[in-house]
Amino acid sequence: MVDDGEERMQRVIGKGTWLDKVAHTLVEREKRLARDLSLIRVESGLGASGIPHIGSLGDAVRAYGVKLALENLGYRAELVAYSDDMDGLRKVPYGLPEWLKEYIAMPVCNIPDPFSCHSSYAMHMSSMLMDALDRLSIRYRFQSGYEAYKQGLLNKEIDVLLRNAKVIGEKIAELVGQEKFRQALPYFPICSNCKRIYLANAYEYVEDEHKVLYECKGSIIGREHVQGCGYKGEADVFKAEGKLSWKVEFAARWSALSIRFEAYGKDIMDSVKVNDWVADNILNYAHPLHVRYEMFLDKSGRKISKSAGNVFTPQVWLRYGTAQSLMLLLFKRIAGTRHVGVEDIPRLEDEYDRLEDTYFNMKIDDTSSLSPATTDTMKLIKQRGIYEYINHNRIPIRAREHVPYMLLAQLASVAIEGKEVEYVANRLRTYGMIKSSSEISEQLRERIVKARLYALEVLQQSKAEEVNVEARTIALNEQQRKAIEDLIQVIGSNDDAKVIQSSIFDTARKHGIEPKDFFKLLYMLLIGTDYGPRLGPYIIDVGRESIIDMLKRYINTN
Image (tube, rainbow, N blue to C red):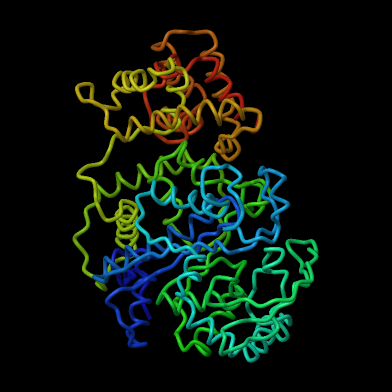
């Protein structure tokens, strides 16, 4: 039995993160399977039927993280971004034109782009996710599902699956209780008459001609029944005239592309269960290693949905936040449900700064793979690893300037438009937060511009909803509340920065609060961190009325 005083030891794998654990497990599994390790492919599906959101991006970014961890272990790896662009349109996503209803149940690769900037609806949606990946500097290989079918990449798998359709249908019913594939083939032809998918029932496979016979009977699409046109025909399964059902298509992709890892959300757990069995038992391809993740929810607890109108896109995040903060959101952990909204951006920006400070200040001897480490050391090693993966294993020479995001937002919001960078930089020099003799970095310049947009487009337009989440989560005791009420009176009656600065000390002592603790509280209330500039000059720069309004919100919620 381990003594209470004995330090608990852990084994360090790679960089010590959950990504390294997955990569190590993957490699050991592949070795047991005796598969070729000269190139390890990981996959992420790109949904092409609706507007991509943070959760959609998370699937790809986490797969990329596993790729980085594999490379750190010395293996060559590749991320395949597979677009299911033959998926049928089930409903019109919120905010898109109503004329799209005419295309319900048509493959999204055959639907015009409602924004008229891409070759199809599918390419527009896929390009939004690819744009986010590009802006995060993530390397990947794009694979169009339509092109995969057209080029015959899945032909071998399609033939084997359709030849074994009966046993597959029985197993689907056994595993997940779905009866339809006992009668229908796990293949959806595109009706050559009405051009829709999912409505035609494929009932026979002509093996020597690689064709399915079908009748366009209709089906439930979304939550409504869509009537088929009644046409009877045949589809060549080797000519992209249809697609496999989700219950078997993942398995076909894994086998054809030699995929070794794919994460999945719990909403497709049944499909993954079936596909694993199909890969193992029908295609004789050991299914990939999986990690199951929880879904992203909005702040009200609703699932982020392409059709419900609560989509939080990567582009919105990157309008106000940096690539590093978005990568931190997606890399820091995979377990548990995540509630995410635009109000999380300031917190993640500051958290990344703390992570970078930790990285450049930590004193840890280089730790070799699988060496033992104490619990405290392990925590630091994980933080170092996450930081390095966020930076794609290309580490900056030094830390950038760290300034609380909300401070940047507040200062930039009162600056003259077009002069906000110069104004904020001058104020930060006055506060002593950046060196007076040096030029500001491009990273700080970028954050100032983004923070200004956040202040003008998020904070100012949503004051009634109290977008600053800290206003709802910091509880004041009676002593603190009365001290802040007194300070509000001082701020309201004085426009001298020095008087306000000294009054903060006086107010703290008057109410029996340590001045350093009172300053930390004010920093948390005003800019969301426990440090910041000299408060007297800051209050004058941001505006006394604005500061009073912010403080009163906390008084009114406590």
